[in-house]
Image (cartoon, rainbow, N blue to C red; front, side, top):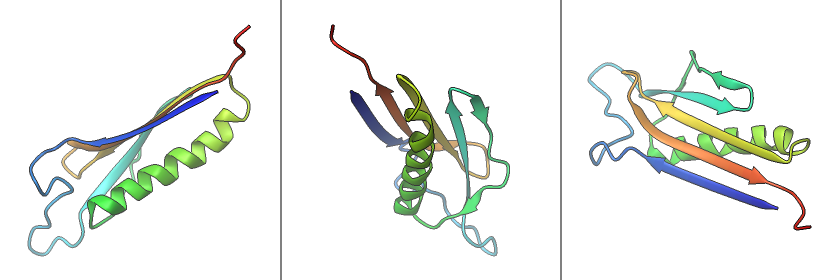
Length: 103
């Protein structure tokens, strides 16, 4: 059994998680899920204020989905792409799972 968890941000500037322009409040991020069921686009989004909050939300989404999908599959690939309000991908997280026998 193998499981790989990976997360990365786009590296767009030092303040990659979004700047708040005057009067806008917190930046909104959208968490699109790609798994064995295809793409599930997030049209609602969440207001988050830091890179750590984004990373925690990606981790929560990945582990919640993995609990369901890995329990009945020999293989699973799950990815979460995070977009900012302009549609620019600023972060992603990914889990890859394989299970089998050596014989």
